[in-house]
Length: 235
Image (cartoon, rainbow, N blue to C red):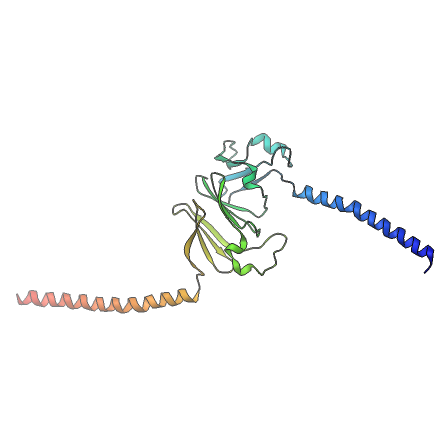
């Protein structure tokens, strides 16, 4: 092989290696910068409250206008008020997840946070302190084999918070109905899949048992009434 060709090839490979070494740190720096925490706000689903999150001092991307209005991270009335319902720190809300949905009780004390991330699908907070969290596959194991896209997995069909019974209910895309205690985040025993075969069979069995009992009871009452009338007439 020509020595000049070998020499030129070696120089080209050396240049490529140097370029790779230069671009590698640049890409890593860009990724680190993109992942850096930054100030953000999130409105609750009922529009009553505004969650304000201010990143740690010297370690994030501050929003000067936001910080001038809201001095501390926490939940505020969504009416322009700067008096917080409660305050918290960034550590409790370190993930700025763009698909987060926030559900609160009318007083803002209890809050449920829904998201599409596999590591944080659902979390519960009491005055800003996290008391329970669930990963996606912990709640919906049927999705474990599904490849998660960059923006997360859509697993929620419908969600609602009942402030009277203090329950948070989620209907999943797989047909499950999940119920949780809003005050503790603990999962409550529910009926599972509303259209399940077992549930349908149970309802039919109850109906088949209840209808004959009701008919027999009705006939017995009618006979007793008739008997009382006859007895009264004979007296």
